Structure formats: C-alpha cells, structure tokens
Length: 231
Image 1 (cartoon, rainbow, N blue to C red):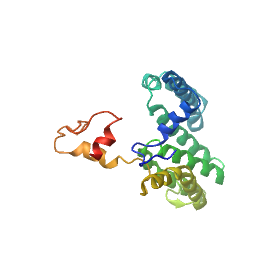
Image 2 (cartoon, helix red, strand yellow):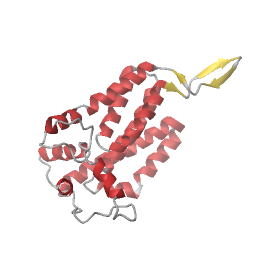
Image 3 (cartoon, rainbow, N blue to C red):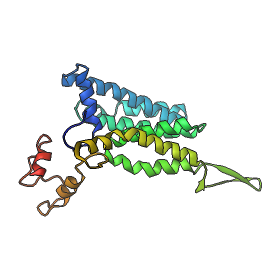
Image 4 (cartoon, helix red, strand yellow):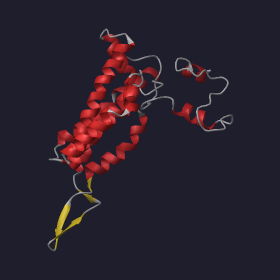
C-alpha cells in the first residue's frame, strides 16, 4: 500500500484500479464495465439534483440528458479517471443540497468526506473547499422578517458547527494519503507530487503554445514521466 516514493499522480484512481485487480477482475473490460455502472450512478445523481432544485420534471429531464451525453458514454470505455471525477463531483453537489435540508452534523460530515475523496481523485477539487465552507457556515438562503417583509441575509454566519463538521469530513477522507507520502519519502505531500512538473511543462522556454509539448528529455509516457524528471 505504501511505495518507496510519494504518489506522483493523484492517488485514488490507482488504488481504485488496484482494488479491482485484487478482486480478480484483471481484464480491462472488467474495469470498463464497472465504470459503466458508475455512469448509471451519475444519471441517477443528476436526476436527484434536478428534482431537488426544480422539481420532478427538471429532474427527469436532467437524467435523460446525462444518460445520452455522448462524451460521458465515450469516457466510460477508457481506463482513465474521468468517470469517477464526474461521479464524485456530482455526488458532492447532491450531498451539499441534501445537507441544507434539515441540517445535521452527520450530513455535513458525509458531505465533507465526499469532497475529501474527490480531492484525492483530482487535485482541482481543492477549489471547492472554500465553496463548501461558505455553503456550510454562511447562509445565502436564510430569510429574516423585517417589518413584515422578508429579506435575504447574504453573509450572515449561520452554523459554525456545520463548517467544523464539513472540515472534519474532508480531513478524515484525505489523511491516509499525506501520511503515506510521509512514510514513503519523509515529506508531507498532500496529494500528487507532480505540481512542479506540470508548471514546468506549461511554461518552459521551448513550449511556444502553452499546451502539452514534452521537452527533449521527457518520454511522453506515464510509465517513464516521473523517472525522466528525476534524471
């Protein structure tokens, strides 16, 4: 479970694949089928989100559109983490909406946990941490009666406890990976160990377009990329 170096890529999808292989499903077709099942879950989540926000008609329409969204169907057939990213992102939105309905500590804990799992799948989900904090601890939907009328309280502290529980959920989900990186390398690395390399690839002198243009020393293959950067 712990290698001899910190995780070079976001760690959750490699562990997801390792778990599938450990169960004996070592054919890539098996992984594709599991991802197709996850895709069905995305359809259900989209239906529930639309239902909660705007009612059953919008919910069913949302599910229908997602079910026939061709890029999603396409990526379910590839052994890459795109399907899991969409699933966890959609689940986070659903959990956030659900937590606001009858706010309880365990709902916020679970919502933070879902975001924490997503963070270990794709580092970009860090952008949603302050969004969750705002959603949990500050109310944009609470109303107060003022002289017989209702007014919005956009930045009123409402439930600091919800913010604390959401933050605890994130920490409980992510802690194994920084600890694993520390045990492997002696350094506290939160997730992936390739941030510097990505910044270099997008900005080195020979990259004129700003896209992915590998330098001469780098083999454009995930199996060799980390090793080439260490040379």
